Image 1 (cartoon, helix red, strand yellow):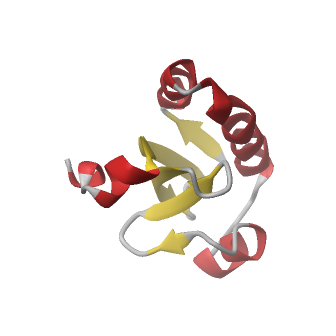
Image 2 (cartoon, rainbow, N blue to C red; image 1 turned 135 degrees about the vertical axis):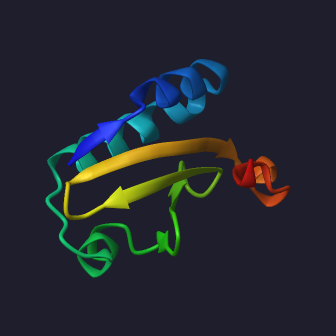
Length: 94
């Protein structure tokens, strides 16, 4: 899949260095993926929540990554990378 806004990942791990390895691992897996449905994605990321946007748990659920996944065009648009507390406070709604 093509990932749009990788810069958001880099910005976040520069602010939270402990997230870097997990975000790089997420990027590597998603970039190679060829998911055609949310069910296929959940086989790899069982804890993801594909509703109107997909929420991925990062670094053992310490961080949350929200993205829009388009299975037809094979693109993932990173919307937010947040701490769990920022996510719980609704920062992903902005």
